[in-house]
Length: 384
Ligand SMILES: Cc1ncc(COP(=O)(O)O)c(C=O)c1O
Image (cartoon, rainbow, N blue to C red; front, side, top):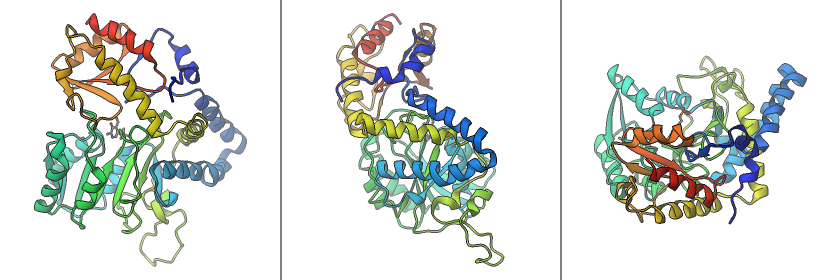
């Protein structure tokens, strides 16, 4: 891919023509194909009413499972289950743990996990060890050491950290080096469709979660969890959809669970996110857009941005996380600065969209931008 796919995002551009959007790592603009897909969800509700669920469970959801499984090289699409957000999955996974469970994680997990974990700690229900994400190069080794020392029930870490964009180095090897006892969950939200990801070697060992909001360009309501088939768990937090496909009565008095990922399902949800996700995945194929081509294109834009950043700029290459030249970076640039929030607010006033997480200023690159946009962004940053 050598050209931007800008014309395919015409509806988002038309909605606010003056906006310069550099937050692809957050609410990604939706390509035009999602418009018809979203309408189709409405039309199916109107035409089919309650019978729309036959379509959702017979066509829409299996198609989304196949698309995600193919992208992640998962051997069996049925290990995938969908939910409106990752928070739901996090809670369902927590509900599999014993009382006073021990948890090993990083100090850089997204709030959906971190806030819930802190609250559980406050309630005395879990004990957590947080391994510092930095130095990034040794995170994997330190995580494995902590897991060996603490004998946890759960190990939870991100494929790509949300507050730096650092990709955990050889993260599938890290999963394989962990002791065999704990559940292992990888938050892949900043990896899915941003970083080429092959789960085939760890599909039996690790849960993997991500969703449609960011690089999948499909919006909210389409989060997914890969459930390793080897350990059939019975989450205590369980919705009635988790019973779908279960053999009725086969388990006596025990609450039955459906096969594959179904056991981690919730309840009634808005399926429009899955319609949009399917439309985007089809469109990506038509455009020859793979995680590899996306990465090559967006890294090209990142390089252009960094090469053109003048020494007089308030943004300094030395503030980059991970350091300049480090290849283990996702699809956004992170600069550490006490001015991160102020910069974001100033730029927003000019309708230049970036974001900040505490002292981290984040600029996200995507296939809907081109070099002209990068030049405009540099101009705006020079004025900060
Ligand atoms: C690493 C990571 N995980 C998860 C999420 C989303 O969480 P949820 O779907 O619970 O809102 C985000 C969103 O920004 C994220 O950055």
